[in-house]
Image (tube, rainbow, N blue to C red):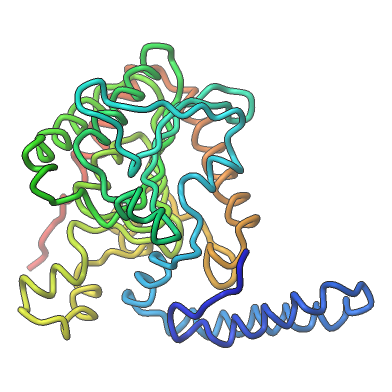
Length: 317
């Protein structure tokens, strides 16, 4: 990985310690020093972690070095074959979709894809899909359903693209149609929120039997910046908006919007790809095995009641 850059202020001491460890790792004689620095790194992260606000977590979720969908595919899926186009308008690079082998079993994999370089970001439209992206995703899901392949979706988007062209081609209809059709698919569906879970853009590939969420990702009906602009008419209220939206994995687990939180390594997913992939693999595998034991009818009932329960609360006087 290229030289790290500070994305949020709190990670500065972590970057310094990681650089020291990397320099010492070239010589086996430095094992004792390395272990000491690793322990210091862990303690420093514990100290930082206790100070993390929802806004800090948003910054970690948006970190430019955070692993994206194609990184997970490269490390968890064998012989991935990407499929393109919605058979109506064209292909949308903001959505990656295809088939591959997960621990020997054929699965369909769909996910948002951002870019790292300026060229990639423009090509992927910053991970904001057009309607043809969602139609492509559904085409692959229906193909998976036809042949009985489980579906894995990786969610990481600021939201669906709000441009004129996208609206003219039926952005809202494409999202709504996906919600309905995904709720009816008979195969196991696991959704993993790996970074930003932005509004309907995330939900359009986020209807499943199990919703897993990386520890420092977020999932929200609107971005805190958008919420602050609408409700407070000021960007100074972004921190308040982030707190009020209850968009962190801990909040959403308590509200029963998600099923499990996938722990991230010291410093966040971008700090240790290998450990992140191992953790994600462990949780996907466990949940997939559980879902495969259920009949299609039971899965559909479970999925229906799961989403019907969301938002239900009791007021106490």
